Image 1 (spheres, rainbow, N blue to C red):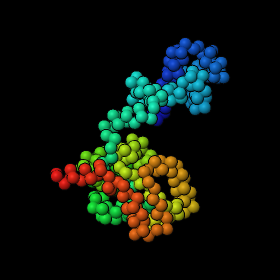
Image 2 (cartoon, one colour):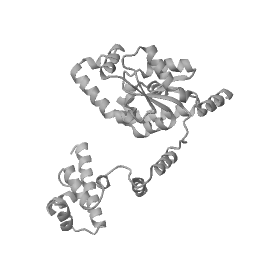
Image 3 (tube, rainbow, N blue to C red):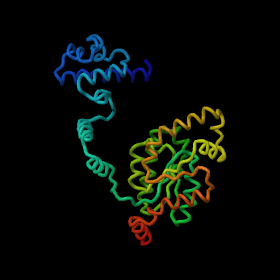
Image 4 (cartoon, helix red, strand yellow):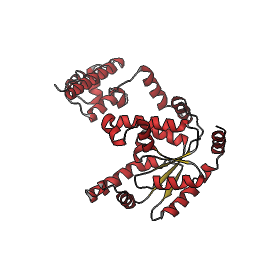
Length: 298
């Protein structure tokens, strides 16, 4: 048996044990669970024994029959009694309670003191416009991916090859924490996929005045090509479809930004002027003025 097969077998056994334990906690016999879920007793017995590859749809019926959430019976690494209690408390928490819990768990205050963060797809102009605006307002410009490379002494490609996506996201968080610790206002250009990591993206939203730089999909593609990235040209139709799919899936997350700046059809100068106008509230905020004074004293 290969390592993958052994891991899958362990997962199914653990899943079966959780179903059996939950059924016992609720005082349900297999017959009662069978009646409530519409599944045969034989199927439930096989499920609890960790036999066969259970359908997610049928597993959902089992969870519903026990008045449980599906995630309650799916094995997860590092699950502890306390984490289960916290999860259940969060399900019934008010938005204010959730915000307070996030502040405590992240160790971050609620006030924004780090400057401006630019989010959006590749080709949105984050690096180009961010550098121009940073020069105009006298702030430091930082590309998060380059900061990750500087701190790791590895390229992004090398990090992904050595540590995988999870390792890269961990280093991304470390780099972001390092930038926040500097205590000076910056203009930060983030990677397009940063919104897919909830903890990191939430830290961006809570620490920076966040701007979604957007453009038409065709302009995104054209800009990336003009930058010398020929990968999207391998299959133009497929690449454009993929880009539209990515944009559609990320739009609700990008839309959480404080403001949106559409750069479609604009020159760099006009787009930079529009961005500078959009971030004026952040540049002139009391928090930033206080931070600049503190940095000057240092």
